Length: 167
Image 1 (cartoon, rainbow, N blue to C red):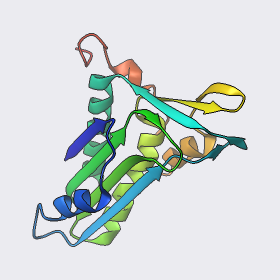
Image 2: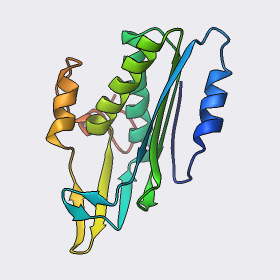
Image 3: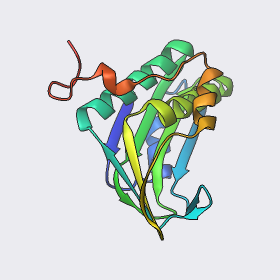
């Protein structure tokens, strides 16, 4: 399992190739790349800024990936999430899942993205022609969690920002 939060862009081909090379028993790699759109909620988006608490965010992403590993027999998982100022067409997130068979890889990739969209502690601020606005998770994102049997949680409540994790 690899989880990285970074400002730099990532190269999809090289990241997936490295994941695939990690185990000769891998039969499937499924990936998802999220991209900044130039429109959201019917309004133009000039830029998007993603903020996070470093220790809390990495631990939350690791927890999401571990939960996927408990549900499906995965061989490796990679999550890269960017933070900072992003422009339309910039890559935001990469989730790549390797398993022996495609079914597990597809399901785990979708699970991780659905979980990440609502539970990972990132805060998005969009700059629009009318000014800045904070963006909440969409109702459809919350609903996507229910198909996995997960209720929306306040992930930040599980962390003490001064120490990283609650005792």
